[in-house]
Length: 214
Image (cartoon, rainbow, N blue to C red; front, top):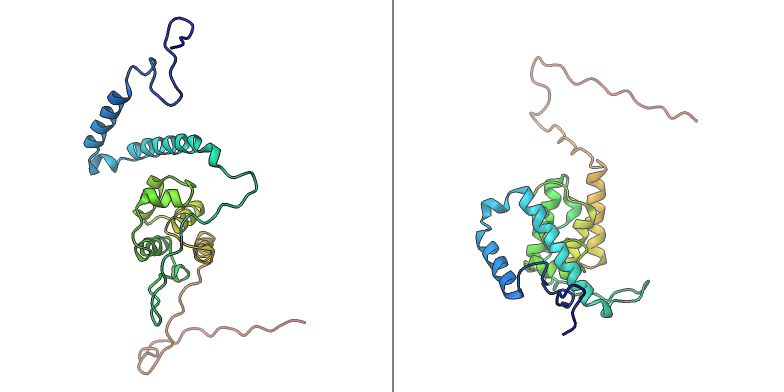
C-alpha cells in the first residue's frame, strides 16, 4: 500500500481516514446512535433542523459527485424523473386547485393536499424526483408550516410528487399572486330581503360616479 509523506497511509476518497479517527464501521455506529437520540422534541429545535439540512445537502452532493459520469451535458434537457400521478376517473376531479388559495396558509395546505392526492410520496423520493433542487428535509419543514415557502421549494415539491408542467405553472401562479399581495378581497354578499339598513339606521354613503375624461 502506498504511503504519504510522514508515513500516513493513503486512503480512498470518500472513506474515513486517519484524520477522522474512526473506521467506517465505527462511524456508522455513531450515526446509528445519533438517530436513536433524535426525539421529536429535539427535531423541533431550529438549530438541529438547520444542521440536519446541511448534512443532507452534503450527503446529496457526495452522492451526486459519485454519479458525475452520468450527468447530462451542459444545456441538455433532463428526461422526466417519474410519470405524473394517475388521473381521477371520469366525473371526478379530486386534485386540489392552488389557484383557489387566498393566503400563504391555504397555499401550503394545497401543497399538502397535492402530496396526499399523488400518493404521499416519501420525502427522500420527492427530493430525488426533483433532482435535489432542495433537500428533502426542507420540503418536510415547508409542508409542516403555514408560512409561504420559497417558489423554488414549491416547485420542487410539486415536481417531487410527479407534477408536470401544467401543475407547476398553477402553483407558481398561485405563489406569485400571494407573494405580491394580488389577492383581491372577497366581495360582500348583496343585501337581500330583510338585509337592508336597520330601522333608524343610516344607509351607506353613495359612491360618486366616475366620469371618463377624453
